[in-house]
Length: 432
Ligand code: PMP
Image (cartoon, rainbow, N blue to C red):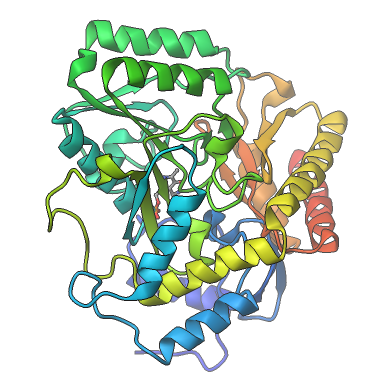
């Protein structure tokens, strides 16, 4: 294998192109050398502020010392047994702590897996086992993963679903409300009723799955009125309500679970990404009677709930308490919102600034007209930002939303520096 003595981003990118399929997309042609908290240094020594957090994984920042220490300690004891073969306490302790934290005044149990998509897959399996029903209702613009079931649930075709069908049957989509694009809560409720009329009887539906704030879909917040309505519909028809908190969970929105903002308790919650500060683990947390529906052996996975990731996740929960990071998420959210709103005052193209807690985004449209979403501008902004030392992600049904997922542990100075780069990059992108 060829190795560069002094690799450059360009030479590594050329090797990547030759060795890795193009289907694995890339946001930037940057190769990391090292990272700390809210900052990254590339192989050429260039510093970047990280407003992406590895797509919502680093609420506690890169290499938080407490997380690194917990994983080092775990490395020195044991790294893998497969929990189903020889069990270990960190898995059980993490389940206990998540059960205690999750909303809902009922007994809970937690299952660990490895990825967000796997958590969603298992939530659907559990819902079907519990209800004996097949149907699953998801929402337009939603994102639930890249496996076949989760692609089926995902409500955005390009680039995720293109060329990969057919997807599993018994999946239906209701409309997700979007004030800017003229979809009201009532429209969403009507679309659910239409599904019950036209496509599937409620008694065949096992679960309704919804993101409390759509992540990939553009940081669209599910209005409390909709979540309350879904809870009532689920209760009426014996359907389970699943909150996909893979992106919103682990404190991003100022609560450990974003559903807490609404006061609505789902029957199951999927969690992943930031729960272990960069180590791969996901969870399904749910009503104990529901979670116990599958037979022994029906759930699990070789690496599911790896000891290293459990140790990291426990450390992340400790860090949140010690550093008061839920409050910090509120403060960071306010800082980001004010920064983006200042841009909206100056530039008509900023059609909306929105979010929940520290999950903040701005939607870009030509002349601020929601019917003319400007994906090219969002893309150019992110490219200019990278040149100026800021890693930024876009998202949204139309690809025209710039989202911020900066570590909550980043300093105000770093966050302000990042915001200033967004301002300068927007100007540069508008100038062409
Ligand atoms: N659900 C949501 C809400 C997500 O944001 C994501 C990832 N972006 C997933 C599921 C899938 O997670 P993973 O990529 O870990 O499979």
